[in-house]
Each structure stands twice: as C-alpha cells, then as structure tokens.
Amino acid sequence: MLYKVGKKGEMNYWTAWTVGNFVFKEWGQVGGKAQTDMYEASPKNVGRTNETSAEEQARVEVLALFKKQHDVKHYRPTQEEAQEFKGNCIVPRRIKKLQGLSLRRPNVLFHKT
Image (cartoon, rainbow, N blue to C red):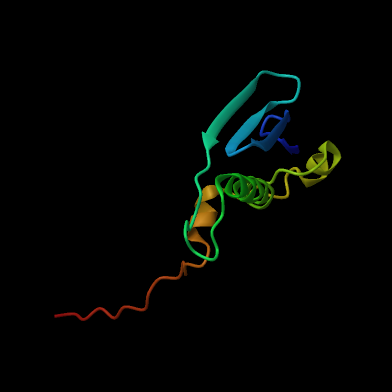
C-alpha cells in the first residue's frame, strides 16, 4: 500500500494486487470510501522465447503500476514518508510544460523599407 498527502492535507492511499490473471486496484482517502478497478491481463509474445503467461503478465503490470505511482504520482510506502515528502513535488503545470524551452526573445532584425 502506498500513501500520499492530497492538496487539502488529506491522506490518500493506493494499492494493487493480482488474483490469477486479474489485476485489482484500490484507492481513496484513508478512513474514507474506497474506489476499485479491475481488468484482465493478457499473455504477451505467445510462441516466442520471451513469452509471458497471463498470470506472469498480471504480476509484471502490478509492479509497473507501483513504480509509476511512486515515481510519477509521488506516493510513498508509509504515511510518515508521505508527510515528509509533501510539498517537495509541487511544480506548477505551466512551468513543467515550459521547462527546456528558451523564454528569451529571438534576435530578429527588422528592416525599414
């Protein structure tokens, strides 16, 4: 289970698990109503040397989901770590989009005719 402090200071959680080839996800506020989602993982690369069964693929997908929630969505393994991390990841969306772009005016010569 992973935790994150929301914009209004509430503690949110997220978790995922597998049952056979089904992937389950659950998220919501701690002590609040939970939301769930479920989908069926399908086998990949059938007939090849790197083939994965549906059950193996479900486990791989859950690990990838945990990594994404930790790295991109800023969820943490404990509530204490989530409290410490709060505020470290806040970057306005506009600035994120403009990172890497030069904001200087281009050097354009204007000719009087």
